[in-house]
Image (cartoon, rainbow, N blue to C red; front, side, top):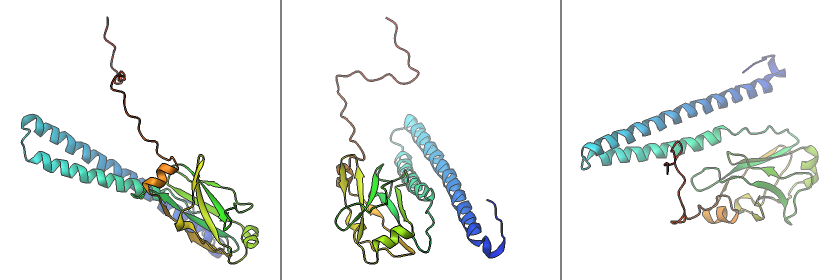
Length: 225
């Protein structure tokens, strides 16, 4: 992090540098904390296995199982926090506009790879504003410059449409967006299981054929004939 600190002329740049430094430090701290949680989970698992080898009826085994479940839930929460910490909101000028947000599932995790399209009330894409790819954090952002914002005019109704392969949906939570110079609009989307299936974001695991041979584990050697 490098601060120029030349007074008012560098204030905006200096503030951006401070914010970026804080976000980067947060990501590093979350990574460390997640590693500690995973290590704790492994220790609890090993201890439960040790007790089970001695006495399967040991009452401490159930208690350790509950502790492991809570540690697993904390790792899930930290994964969400890591996704949020990775987001970098683009700057917007006083004459431009920004529409941004996250697309997640019901657990606040990124829903999956897809594109976001900014459309007008008639469903046609806004001219000059290309579709954007939703990143691994589930984040999308449409940055409009002065000309694009002015061309839309005050009172224009916009919506964010999500597309994946040949499927698309128009979430109600992103409808009736109005823009004017200097506007920043946050529109998060929480997709239902049905939405995720419709967009084909998470393919279902194929049922295993009981008659098919299972692959040998890594490192295993084939028996000699």
